Image (cartoon, rainbow over all chains, first blue to last red; front, side, top):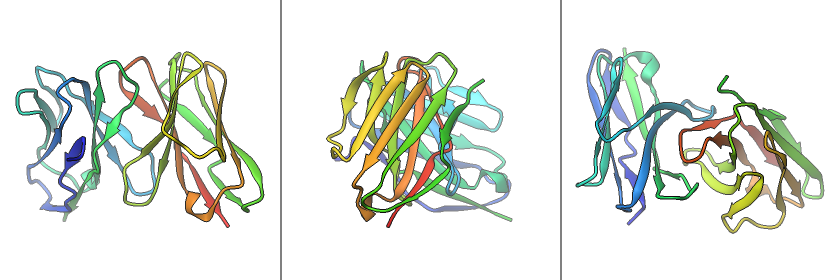
Length: 110
Length: 111
């Protein structure tokens, strides 16, 4: 089993739709969780950190479920510009070894 | 300023060449990272420096040699690379175990 798993997609959704991605992790001692987006041939850019209480930034909401060992990302009112690959990242306790999921591709269609 | 800079943006080198990639950040972060990324794959960790000391080497071949001259700079020295080493090389930095910030990368082609 991979340490961090994501559905690779692609998720093809119409503009205005709501879409959700999950990311599961295997190490229960993981301490920090992040969502990044990566556009084609560009570097990953931080989208959100994921806190135990959940957090929201505009149209984006991230949740952490420690009991079931997954994090989620919800995008409301999808825009064409949201088309990208979304990477979840998990860090085990006390290590700089950030572990990337394989990424989920999102295409928002006009 | 959440900027990490990398030079060069593109690099083409032969298998006998020696070249270096450079990375700089001025956010006061004490952890800096090198990643390699192939097309349609996630970034793959190569090296981590923490407080200017090498703390993680992910069994990277010796033809890649990292260097951290000071807390703001990170280099990756390349020698005798193979065509399969062609990839996007990303530098990142973080403050402790918090969010990483990535540079734009160097796109390397080995002929």
